[in-house]
Structure formats: structure tokens, C-alpha cells
Amino acid sequence: MSAKKQDSQKINLTQSQWLNIIIITVSAMLLASVLIDRMLNKASDNTAVEQSRAQQNVIINKIDFGEFQFSLVDGVWQSSAEKIAQPQLLLIVAHWQSLLQQSGEPLKHSELNGHTLLIYLSNKETPIIVKLAQLQGEILISFVTAKREFLLPASDYKFYYPS
Image (cartoon, rainbow, N blue to C red; front, side, top):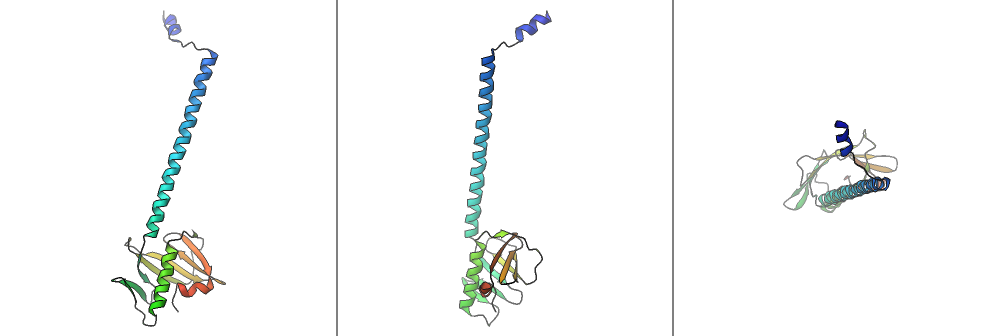
């Protein structure tokens, strides 16, 4: 009697019916794969836009060059070094602000001789550690904490470090 039960539970489909089931299953899996890919791409695009907006809204509060500092006090930039004129100070801060909004290249040079700067932002408590080094005909600015760097012409040095 158990053999008869097994026969009655057996699904009898034709070859074309099995083929239709396989086609529908593969199509459903393909559609699911495409939809998941689109959702992941949309999520990563939204994240990139949010990060870009966050970078654009960043305001520098202070730049610590070691032996002197630039600070934003009541909306006015001040320098602890008396020799630095206000126009030069504003130019240097504007260049750092502009550089922070760019993506740069992945960090390749980890050990550098040069100046270490600390840049304090309005939206972070901890500073960004920056190394500024002069290379052969270029300056290398490495954002150590963000793991990115910029190679600029040596003539731009005065825009990032007062002399």
C-alpha cells in the first residue's frame, strides 16, 4: 500500500511544463539580481552625495602650524604670528578650505619630512593631521587621517604655508 501512496504523490508534468517552470525560475532570479544591483548602486550614489555635501559644509576653525596658529574668532581670522598680514592669512585659509573640498589621491607617501599641521573643523572635535613636504619641484600635502594626498606645483607652497 505504501507503494501506491508514493505513486499518487508523484507530480506528473510534461517536459514542456518542466521547461516553463525552469524558465520562470531563472527569469525571476535574474530580475531579483538586477533589482538588488540597482538598489545597491542607488544607495552608494546617495552616500557619495551626502559625503560631498558634508565636505562642502565643512568650515575650518583653526589651523595649527606648530610655531603659530590661525584661528577664527567671532568670524574674523587671527594669527598668533605678528609677521603674517591679514590678506596673506585669508589667502592661506581659503586655499586650505578649497583643498578640503577636493577628493585627492589615495595616500602613497606615509613617511615624510616636512611640516605637520593640525586643521580643526567646525563639525569635528579631533583635528585633521596634515603633512606638508617639499619634493623635487612639487609640494606634497598628505591628509594623514583621511588617507589622501595632493601633489601641487612648488610655486603654490606660499598658499599653504606662510613664509
